[in-house]
Image (cartoon, rainbow, N blue to C red):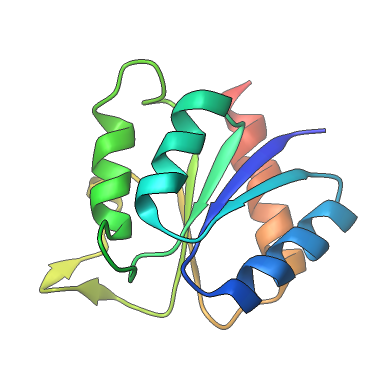
Length: 123
């Protein structure tokens, strides 16, 4: 089963991610802040990351930048899950390093399908 790290500061959303993605055949590990999420990505080397943008301390753009600048994990597929089109004046364009973006609100089935695509693309 593919391993996915989900990083989001909304505990209710994390629970929804865990249940829905597990039902779709993923092993899911969650983190409710960018710092612990980045540590999980570095230690567990997941098949993909689902990343919220707006988080306290370390926001999603910083987490994404740190993943992309670390040779050990730089190729990890990142799916951004957000309702934003920009964050603090920065457009959430693909040049930031994400592999897919899903606009909130979305159906978990859509996220699962997207994860299958980005994980398959890495094979």
